[in-house]
Image (cartoon, rainbow, N blue to C red; front, side, top):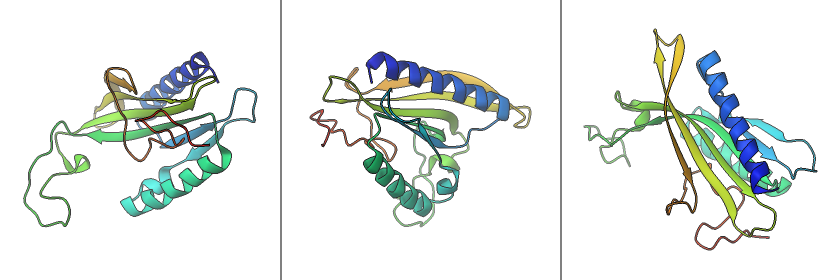
Length: 182
């Protein structure tokens, strides 16, 4: 897959995801496993059931990673909704491991974002091309409509950006060395 092929696919997913969010008021979490351009059709994984708890997410992501290892796609694109907290707020409470920090989902000042994360093995390149795009949004009129706000995009290697998280590194790329395991 060429960089221009991958960029076109990512642009299409971003546009479709934003349209679904505006029309439906939400977007079901999903992942698209993309074979090489001449390969079989893409595989669409609906991730909604695994987003019900942290334990379900851990089990689901283990299954997703195994599917990626088994199919060795040329690209993976994830579409998610997320909450973003500008800065953690210290709160009372004794929940173990939180250290008194309010989780973004519990922050009344949180921002909501449509997130697209991608990784591609590109023809003739040893490193994985990856990036993340966030379209912030807000519900208006009691949640009946969605208004799109600012966009933030980060692409690995541009401006020293490095991505981390459970939806990153699925193709096995090593951000430090650019190595893709065989």
